[in-house]
Length: 159
Image (cartoon, rainbow, N blue to C red; front, side, top):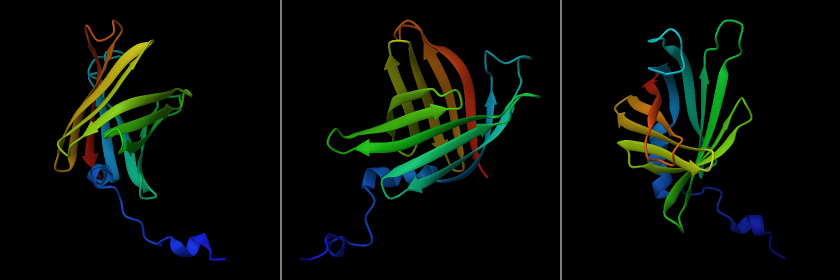
């Protein structure tokens, strides 16, 4: 009886749509700013992010921010993937608080969006992608998208 593993090519091919998301792969310096919840106003919070391939199918983005004095740093993890049958990207989100969320995602190389419409809160991330830089902002809506407030700007710069 033939071994099934012998029939599988050792090298797999990345999905073309996921290959575009590969533009995020690498190391980044991050800056969180213009956050309504930070005191004093104008405070900037430095951080770093890394994005790497998980096999040939997913990109894992880990973002950490410096903590306030006496507090641990925060960490957010996004696993970016795709459903070919539905022609959509999806992002799974987790942070240090134990929060897990699913975001619909778009990515075309110049614009990256994450969007969730859950009963507790609508959220979105909208980012413009340039050479070596991503300029993004997180927004939230507590009235099912009728009005939006900016939570903060998030800037990624290639390290």
